[in-house]
Image 1 (tube, rainbow, N blue to C red):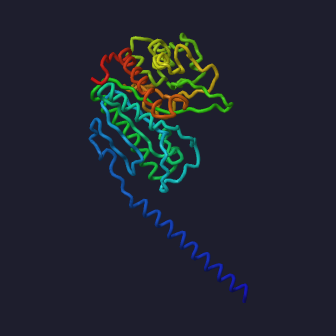
Image 2: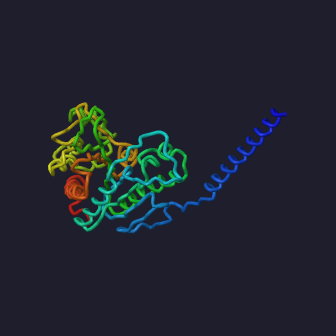
Image 3: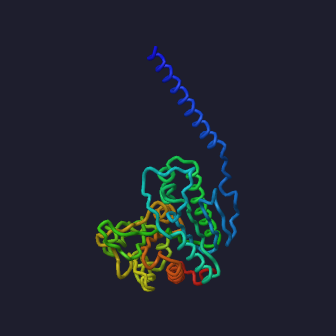
Length: 328
């Protein structure tokens, strides 16, 4: 009798538990199914000097009119409950890269009378990684996927706007690097062109054989430049060497042409997706990995770096794109 009573109680608990789970699943499913996101692009057309925001302000787009795109995929801190934490992949954020990117935008606007296109991911990297392919980036969550879609939609919209006005453009992917696993902190800026550290260790003659240019993110830029590939990559008028001469040591540059076996990031998903490596795209790309000290710590440093980047872009576009008045 006692055993029978216990068994009946067990069956009751099992049934109510299954019913509760079923109801919970149904509610979640309805919530997702009933969520209708606006069509991508419905907030356009995108007007220069205007700000646009995605669903829940997870993504921001500052539309510009310079032939420059600045994107910050890992600077966000939002932790919404509707997006569960990712369970695989890199989770570290790039401190203050969002704030630095906006400061740079304002400096360029002040100096050129026009601003770059700027795309910001406000989500913490634990929620969505805007610098990975969609499955790794969102891990099946519909809100994370919507944010990922918006982020990349805004970049593509910026590219299209640039090509309507200019023949070519430049995409800059803003990141931050930290202390090496051995405790050493490399205070140089790492510029990624989709060439590995071992490839950068090669001689100029080896790199100039055509193979490495075609696989680099500045393939198209080199085609239109009056200089050869390694000159564009790490010569006098290279992006890194101009910044280096302004007090921001860079790798690669004349002073630091290659990592020589040290840790170095060559560029990720977005640098590949939005550059001109083997694609024929008229937009070239550079991944910019910034150390924290002296660059990312506070607003004074952000503005100082913005001034140096402004000068770099002006010289770089004049030399390689034959654009004498950036912003005109």
